[in-house]
Length: 269
Ligand code: ARG
Image (cartoon, rainbow, N blue to C red):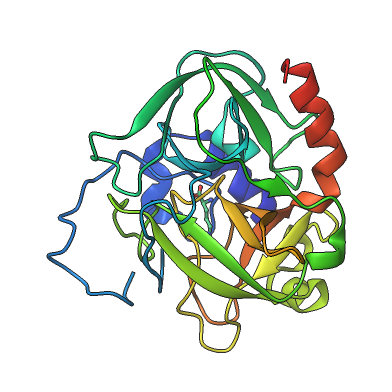
């Protein structure tokens, strides 16, 4: 059954990537592909383009091969499946302040503690907080407190694969994906979807635009009524990447806003 398959792949070694048609596995080691040799603008996240330096200053790349967003200057919001559990942890490095991961201006900060969503078991609740050793001097990303803006077009961004089975990226890629309602998403995924915990997005008819392996933990966001970026999702999973009829599945941030706030307080925010 698919949810247990997902769980299995997530908890086994990176060798499972090859068969991870349907997987929560984060991206493996940064492959550092040549930046401009292959693929022009419009062929890249899957179906995205390069983000401008400073365009999404809250974006963070995590050393285990996931994305994240600055919830506070010293707290990264990411996916539960990107971390191993909760407790003191100095093994993760967060890279921020750059679109080019090899830019000498990159700021890198170590983790101090991890808080994985209480009760996380591989289905739903796919969020976690990483407390950093010191603050990063970049703007934070507000999280949605209610479901009012859980609709419309969303921006996705990350350093993950630019196609199913593709390499991790050196440059931050971005794309736009439309909201997919729960009923439609359930038709694609059946019981694997946890509608209260998850929000779907993607081009149902054509596919072609999506997050992919290594984008996990990164934010899905849109403008709020004041024109400010607001996080509505966390990259979680999908069947393959950018397949027609198989939207990307994101943790529904508004569902967890109160829990995230409480957890951040417990991390000494
Ligand atoms: N679980 C993947 C990761 O760890 C993210 C997959 C997103 N897939 C998708 N089709 N949107 O990076």
